[in-house]
Length: 200
Image 1 (tube, rainbow, N blue to C red):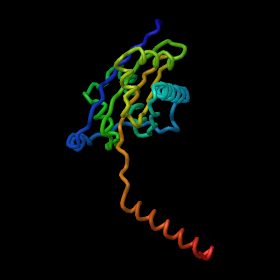
Image 2 (cartoon, rainbow, N blue to C red; image 1 turned 90 degrees about the horizontal axis):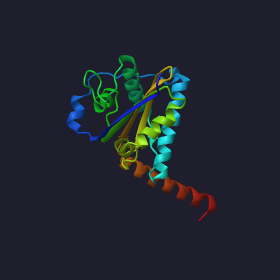
Image 3 (cartoon, rainbow, N blue to C red; image 1 turned 180 degrees about the horizontal axis):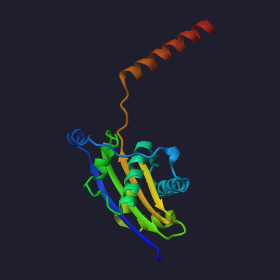
Image 4 (cartoon, rainbow, N blue to C red; image 1 turned 120 degrees about the vertical axis):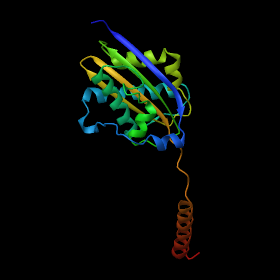
């Protein structure tokens, strides 16, 4: 069979809180990490690391891998493989945003997605990453400076691989008043202990 590579990307999408509330129904199937095919797990890890290396080479911070986003990405790759389609929307019309929300990933403020299909290649990771690099849209997603986290999902049948990488922005958690108060109290106790021990 002839080697084939196909790839698609979506533009970053900002999430509106009202839309998030409307789209929480449904459930995305997840694949527990301990049931992952070792080949798929290796391909996922090598692809994720290659993407982070590209970001580092361009002066960008690494993406943090997120298990919940991994599960959404894996489910989409498995769905494309099982139902023989290749698109950011499944046959029911669910988008990456729909799938994230259904999978319980509700705190992101922006998201994007790269997908790829590679069949018959000795190293599907190398050809997929290079295909994404050679595509302006995919590369823009990879090098988007705002992304903070990502999930990678791979599904395969023999030498045919489906890839999904989902990029998200999670807001930084706000510092709580409790945290600041606890820190101040701890410092005061340390000072008191020092005074008791040293007599100062």
